[in-house]
Length: 273
Length: 114
Image (cartoon, rainbow over all chains, first blue to last red; front, side):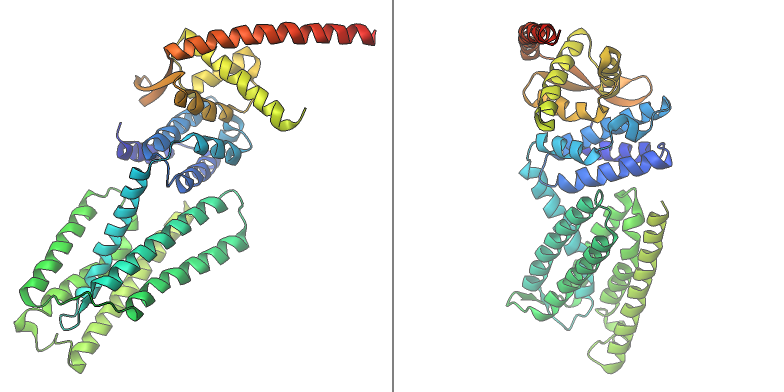
């Protein structure tokens, strides 16, 4: 069975757990996944899937997950993690997937205005920075699962948020000589290509909840980026004029607001779960 | 005896017992834990067996294979390998020697107390 299949089936089977067992197993899976970033993903997922099947069998026999697996899941998880082989190929794949996702989703807003340059250098630096911050964030969430310190969680969340804001500041303040201009048809082609790839990823993703918040910003950037490069719309979408700048800023602000509203809705759904 | 060394001893005994059970038939996590409970290991948290299974698999003493299951998706069954059979025999020999030695000591201890 492929790793992706294991992950999908794991998510499906988890719905059969009772509330308490779902919390117990949910903590275990978050802890193991967060701490196995450098380990063999397939073996780790196979192990987690096997444990879930066993917990479900125990549940059917009237035994809780805690009574079955034990009162010290963290200690057992640490022992399991030690036995999982290190797999740098899996880690490299994960890092490049995260980088690719960042480049795809963050490139479009940077391409909206055809009159400004696209700084490839600062974009790559921000991408690397954001992936490092994301890895630290995932590790932090996993570690806090069994500590359950509210103050640590809130402080960690604030620091994480500030570090993420840092990525945007990096893009603004770091300037490199590797600048590209995407004007006219070249710009339209680049935007369409990115749009098609994002659309393909969106269609292929089964659990779209985490992608929905990005849709308004991506769609707005896509439409604005294309329209501003078509001479027919130049009167309204010339971003060098005051009117064009207002249209650009207000449209992006609405898209950003929508993005946060959807994100808030998704997070509320998650916390209710 | 410290808790750590006692836990190490338990792990060694559990590993040997797992090899003995898998010598009879291929089992998956839950059925293995049930079998262990049948033989008196019912007080041991079942979670303990998962790191042991990983260690035994890493050493090549057992092999995990996904097999169709009657109650849903495929499950990972563990089989004993040729090296596992050798290790099992060694465990039995070592255990019998240890048991004889410890039994003799317990017997002597009992006589002293009387």
